[in-house]
Image (cartoon, rainbow over all chains, first blue to last red; front, side):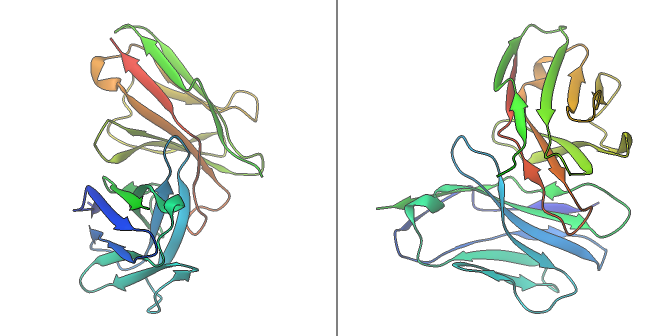
Length: 115
Length: 114
């Protein structure tokens, strides 16, 4: 069975600083996708960034980048130049590329950006 | 910008009552999902729906749960006889692609069972 673990329930960062959110996962499969979703307070979850497991290059979306370590089954999210609007719950998620429709989510990390 | 809408935003019900949660997915999406999150716990998969039938369901999705897409736009989750442990935030999501496509979520329906 696949699992996703986020070991940091809460984090805070000063505006303009950099923060890294951790995520580890467990699977015996080799083909999958990994995602980071952001849920601002009282808003819907939106996709932040996506990584295909077959790609060695780490995904980047503007101020958001990932450190994907396939052998270690680690998928951390780095937010550079943190902004107040980054305050949200962040969920790491995983899905296989075949055999299932299910996305598996972690418990989330609540990030607060401080002015 | 198209979005997934869910109603009601909050529903309070008595144990044993039936509840229907409503979702309007994005119109050209093909895959539909229900997830739930019990307070402080992980977001859990309940069911996926494709081509007018359930494509996958979790062990949580027992006979008390059902889904329907009655009119080509709405996607409903019915809980026949609610239990206290059904209290959670229920999220509807849709996607245009099965794997590489992102999930588009609604804002959630909070269900409180007393």
